[in-house]
Structures are given as C-alpha cells and as structure tokens.
Length: 200
Image (cartoon, rainbow, N blue to C red; front, side, top):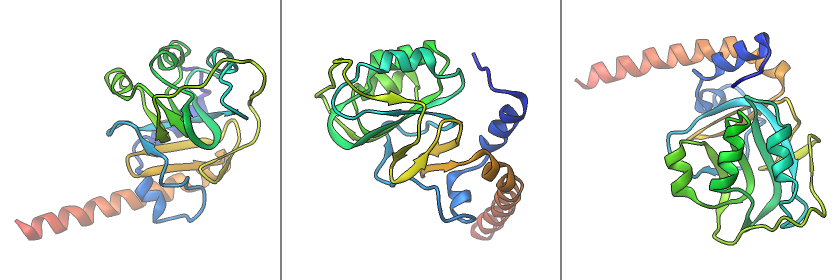
C-alpha cells in the first residue's frame, strides 16, 4: 500500500539505490546523531517523514499516528533523547504495517527487537528498553517541526536510513542532490571493482 505521488515516488526509488555513506561524501548537514542505530541489521528506509513529538512517557497519541500518517511514510519520533521508556514495539509495528508505513525512527527507545527483526520492519532508535510508555492521552503532537537526533525534521522531508546512518533532506535538497549522488556511487563502485581486481 503506497500513496506517494509520482514525482516523489520516483525520487524515493532513486534514493533506495543510494547509500547514506555516499551522501556523507557529498554533504555535511542533515545527518542524525550516529547513536541512533538500527535495532536489527540490513533494514533500509527511504521515505517521506511523518513527525511525532512525545513530551513525556505518554504514548496515547501513537494509535492516531498510525491512522493518520500517509501510507509509504516513515514515522519519526522526537522522544527528547529519553531512553528510559520505549514508545514502540511489536504491536505498534503491526499497526504501522497495517497503515502502510515503512519504518520508524526514534530519538528514544524501542522494545521487542527480536519480533521487529522477524517482521522485517525497520526501526532505528537511540536505546532499547523493556520499560514502556503509558497511553495517558495527555500530551504529544504530530505533523509539526521536530528535532530528531539533533536534526530538524518536518513532515514531508525525505529520510534515508541504513546501517551506516540516517540522513534527512528537504525534497528540494533531495532533487538537487540525486544525480550527483547517483554518479558518485557509480564512480565509487568502479573504483572498488578495480581495487578488488588488484587484490586477486
């Protein structure tokens, strides 16, 4: 299930072939704190962000997030770097997948990491915790400007995340950078091939 518009969908497909390490050779800003890591290796996210801010351990807004976020998007959660309580786990992953979402990035903690790997649902978080949040429905908001991993994120920004890191680009930046990134990755691939041949 994916409702991304044609132009954005094309951009997403092109960035799926680009590594975050390639972007690290070309730009200096937009990289989240490297301590926000994948909870299982091998997952990749390339999708527009849908932002969430949790002001405390209250996770009451999260079910509404999974119903509201457009299919094909990644939920990016500003939990204020609080790793004490997890705001995402197995049940949340099922709800996110039912809504057509493609991943979650949390400046905070997650739980149920074995289940998330079995589901092959990409989650990146600052921490892992068995202690979870509580649905108090007292605070939290979605769709606005947040800070995640030290980087400003707005709903609709393009997020590229893999085992090497997480990059956030405005759509304009993504459009301006994509051809250069594609060319650099081809060039780097050719160099790696040459180096391998020299070793054989």
